[in-house]
Image (cartoon, rainbow, N blue to C red; front, side):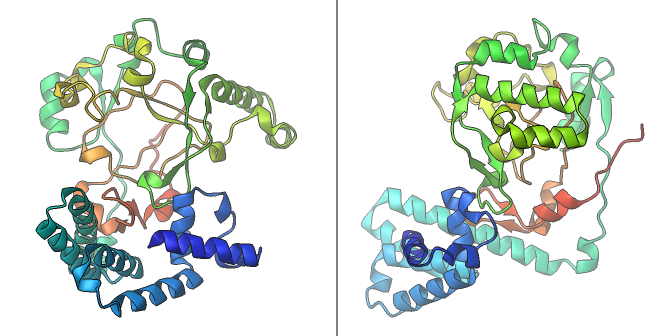
Length: 373
């Protein structure tokens, strides 16, 4: 059914070249296909199309006997924000597939039903909490501990088990890298000919962390452009830096071009894994107990490299797992929220069980919580 929406919109754009510009946010057509489809569904003309399709399906005499029709209607009702009705029709789709013993499609329908269930639960929790209570939170500094003073037992009992974030100093230069911490030049020499798909944040993206894919490139091309940008930024005034970017866009890399994101080293660069000594605090990785070839088993540790200003959107990590990151160069700001506050941040389960958050733009614009210098 969403395919019908996309085809209809493309036809309208062919008939009127200004159609998209009049109904979508600026630069929407530069976004990825899923982001475009999401924006179309939220536009005024898209909602009219969806309303029309909902009415057609409700009048279809085969509706309650065909799971595909119930699924399509549930999906459209979800886009309308009619979550209770969407849940009803997706439950019918699941029941019909269960009777027909079709496991694959039943799992697909069950996944959609679970998305709506979580959306309803988030709304219920928000309705139970007063506005006064939900607005009284404040940003707090993440505690810091020196690795030389932090035992493994203290880490687990005081931070890991209660779910308290922590900054640990002294690890990167304390034996974590057998041959010294990696530099951009070193990574370029080791990984230059390898291909990857950069990822970038798009505030409209309905996908995890508001990220979408960019055109593929090589690590060498990406890092070379990144190094050029950093050298220019360090030696030029702000106006000169801007002029250089305008005159030589092919020599620099911007946030819009994406960044090397969560690039699994075991599967892409196992030779680098040999240089790593994982700190004892994080050495117990249960994913390594899975059978070889299992999804995510070879996903971590992973590599992130990005230009200044790179960021992802607010998100929950894969399967709500614990994570750690080592900062080798530059600066990075984290904002961490308690899992119990998830419903208060406006989670939207539009395309998967990994939500994006309505509060993300407000948090991005909020003043950072800085440490005293």
